[in-house]
Image 1 (cartoon, rainbow, N blue to C red):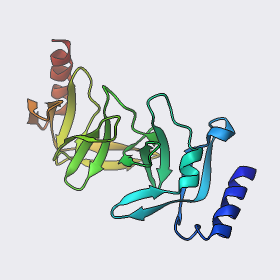
Image 2 (image 1 turned 135 degrees about the horizontal axis):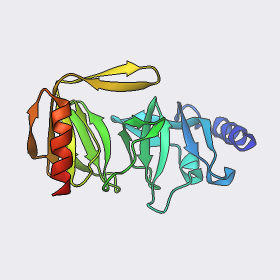
Image 3 (image 1 turned 30 degrees about the horizontal axis):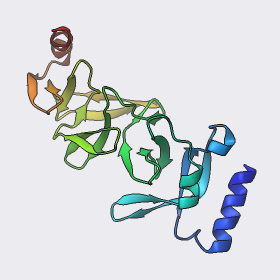
Image 4 (image 1 turned 90 degrees about the vertical axis):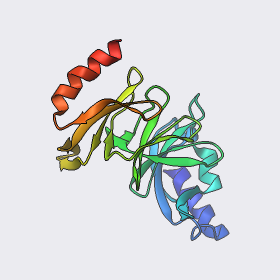
Length: 188
């Protein structure tokens, strides 16, 4: 907390505090990887997030060159150069990379990002699950409903896509029948 207070004081003294009006949660490499909430961490710019360079230098990046940061009520994966992408929140943190891809939302539907934070696949589906065995369950016209501290996906038509986004198991209103067919397809 002392480091956080010093950073805030430095930002205010240098006049940079107003430029970075967003708070964030990140893992500080000088604080043994503990996640802290820090003011004056980032700002919105041209539809994206720009991180305060002082904070960016303090972030603890993993062997894959990425670190999670919570900004503006969303989790993001962040690279050391400051590039970041918003991903869905899963189990109180950022969506993990499964088969090299993490999921995010776009106005048009769900998307998958690679570990370089490039858009690997954009879909028009309202929901998409992580890839497993090269396939991912997707849902068209379903709704995400809060249930306690979690959410559930209800209704809609369910199918499965491959890593190119091609629908390999057709949409159907019965998610249960998709599950058994999807597991069989993954074993082939």
